[in-house]
Length: 429
Ligand SMILES: Cc1ncc(COP(=O)(O)O)c(C=O)c1O
Image 1 (cartoon, rainbow, N blue to C red):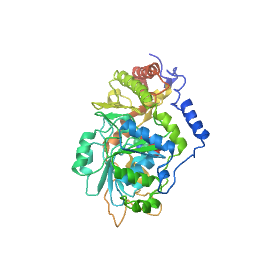
Image 2: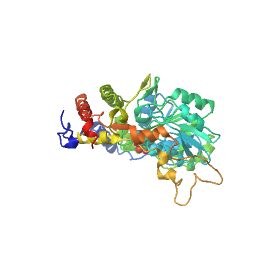
Image 3: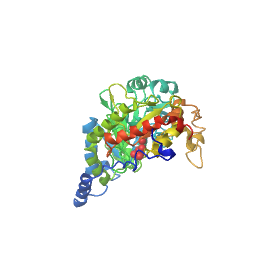
Image 4: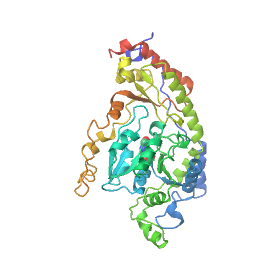
């Protein structure tokens, strides 16, 4: 039994794993081509006509998404955050409305609801797939509910069949936050294409990326139309749409447009989606198998007939079985050369914006409003499973991605074994 690095022993890994980076010659050539062609760096114009929908690279990127995911519309944005904001606007949620979502996600999921002056209502998550479920959503449905917004968290879809059935029963649209799960599947369908709208992220941390970017996909013409208006100062083209006899409802747009450079990079990245996903999935499946050797750890669960794409490789610790806390385990792993993140995000309702019910300095709108009285609760304890995952059980590692190999993951497992062999000593830390 060797001494833990935490107590002065030799660490399993001397040098930390390199970070994930997938930008290379293809992306460089694509950007150079754009400069050689003297393409405008952004080709959007906020006026009716051809350029209302962007330039050549933006349109090409969108076509890749419609072809691959077999959807009618793909609308690019400069982030998934803005795409989500447009999605919530597209389904018509506004002041006085509520959208049911997960508290265990990146803050942008719920912020996209607040940007529309509607209120997020947080449903608790399932402890194995970390997502809201039909059972946790149903009691929260009220006459104010305008949509359901599950998050395909860590690379795994929500359990959509019961959620879609519930949504149908109450005539509610479903928006999938699919920022983390491109190429994931649920019962043969791509994540992001199961609900009425799906949103993908192309930010720098994602499996495929162009620095910043997002894509909204939908088969619904009306939602696509509204999303495009929100993307590009929609208010100024209303007159054009009226004169062209197209349907419209008044709405305020913004500048959420993706530049041609970002689109050119994203196109090259998109071509690598399958390869990068397969690579990551193979590593994650190997690590999940190896983790089964430790009865005090729970590897990620995959729903039957679904593909988990492991944007984040999450696993759980059972501290009672182990006799050590998550904090002790994470400290020991870090000393062995394998930093782990503890807890993922604090359940969103515990953030100051919800605790203080304040999104603006001079007003508590939309949380407090004489016109739209609300009794949505953001009290600690409303989602006990999400709180437990955050405070006690969940851990994740960035080990399952390029350039790591299965051999590197063997070292990760070796570090866990070393810790297991030293449990008694670690309890004193
Ligand atoms: C679940 C989720 N939703 C939304 C976002 C926002 O994505 P973006 O950074 O592209 O705005 C992220 C980004 O990390 C995310 O993980």
